[in-house]
Length: 122
Image (cartoon, rainbow, N blue to C red; front, side, top):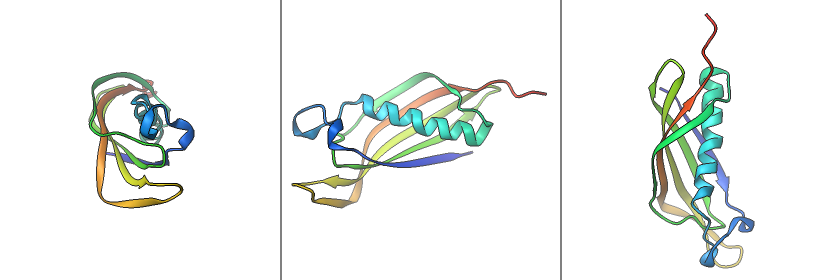
């Protein structure tokens, strides 16, 4: 069907816990952003997030990370679009301002959600 991918640097101002950890809700906000672009490309409308069927936090996200956020439509109804989401850490901040590109990206968060769009005029 259609896949949309965003990349995002996680600023240190988003660190919420010790060890520069970012809260899990950060991923959900990114899923909303990538779903919006997906709906615009597919339907010409931003759409509305209706629900999540599944959310799994598999690895930590830290300030200083570079994330790749992907949304892929897996099922289309008349107005609904079921989407699989993934947040992958592709770069990780280290000491000070140092950072490294990860040889093996880390899948941090996955989800399945549903968005709805207006009925298309006939």
